[in-house]
Length: 403
Image 1 (tube, rainbow, N blue to C red):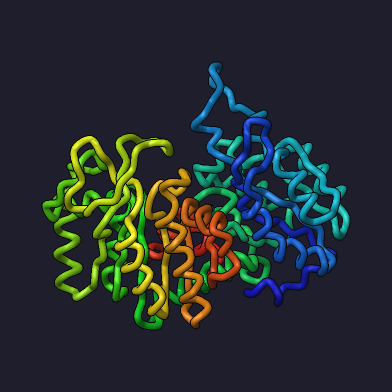
Image 2 (cartoon, rainbow, N blue to C red):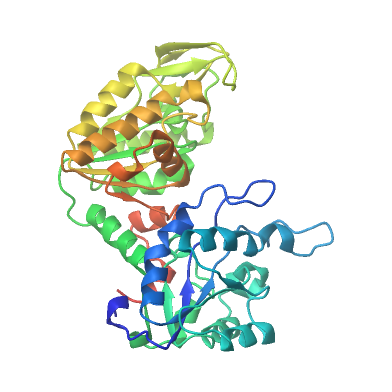
């Protein structure tokens, strides 16, 4: 069932959003993109004459308990997100400092059409991450309709993302617009992508991305690999990588992957040159060298100009693009150039007609930093969920609604 086909007027809608946003030391939201991404669904539901109960998690409070073993409610409360959502909606919101219980029931019963109630962090209850049925049943009792718009949490079989959907029939549950856009965009790269298909994969560790690489090598034409993970693959080919970050216990895995790519005639591009530094610091001494001849005491922190030029040519001539992971330590200005050039190339290719999907927190941050966010086809809010889906895995939050 599509959201547009559900009668919402006069209904209470339970909406799972992903407001797991970064906060500064004063608990101010530093990046509101995930909140902003939920606005189309929120506004649509309100405009149809419904009232909204929003639920989300924020951080991992169960992993960062206070010294006495209790939840740090001050640090992880959803209340930190309310002012940001209120500002974006230009609307006053209600907040209740619990997720289930009498206080929540009373707050829900007081809701009128067009009003929004934000529930407390779902992860303040251990039942959330266990997918507890009784917890989910109580959440479900607050709404006539359940909408899941939290793609970033869709890979978790939690109570508010999966279990709760089972208490609503097919005519009373649906994906929100963001969730639908995420799934449709990923499907374009999973099923019959336009060729040539170029995947740009970066990040720190081969071990974090090997499952994705194994999936991609079956469907892409060109695989561009940058970031620290490239040095594990380079070393597997006999390169001298100096003090660059490397997973020595994954060299066999790297070699096997490269052999598989070769057997499938997939072009794998590693950075032929690197910007190296004598310490992990923006003020370090730097020079440009071949990625196969990095001296001892030096480390690769960005792709070099030859690599950037080669990568850009492949990207700009592509028809389908996946970008997940930066090319270097882009947070430091002296090592951001390679990643920024990738952002430029993806934007140029998109303007020429390619379909581009950018996913993963660092990639999205880099894209935002480049000012090119509006020039790509889709910017995913998914993080881990995006990787899981692109690897061909079933997402519990998606399965519970049903396509």
